[in-house]
Image (cartoon, rainbow, N blue to C red; front, side, top):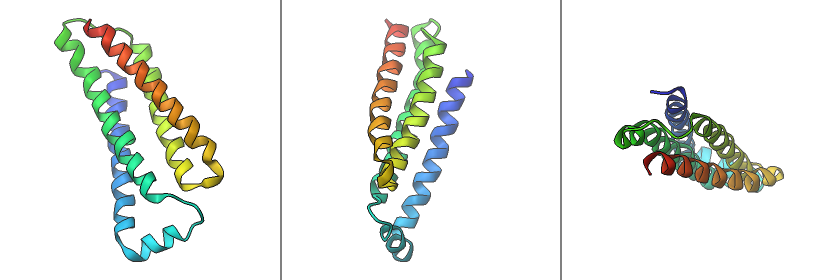
Length: 132
């Protein structure tokens, strides 16, 4: 596997552990109440983004970057695009999560969401050009 594929998979799994841990904290009334006393924090949305953007999307792209070139019988169109996609996705997810839990950091939520979209388009274009 390429280093970028491994990064996608490992960071995806790390985000899953964080999302699952936050889910456990939100399931226990004592910790849930303590978390929600923090003004304006949206812990449920942070939990969702850790699991969906952090785990599901990262794992899907990691697997796709490994499998689709093999199915197509040709190398990945651009390893550089895949590496850029990884860093965009990893940092965008962190930005979105921070934006949900720290209202003062709301610009991170907006920029993280936009960056996540850019990363997805970059990844899809890379895979599209690989399997064409």
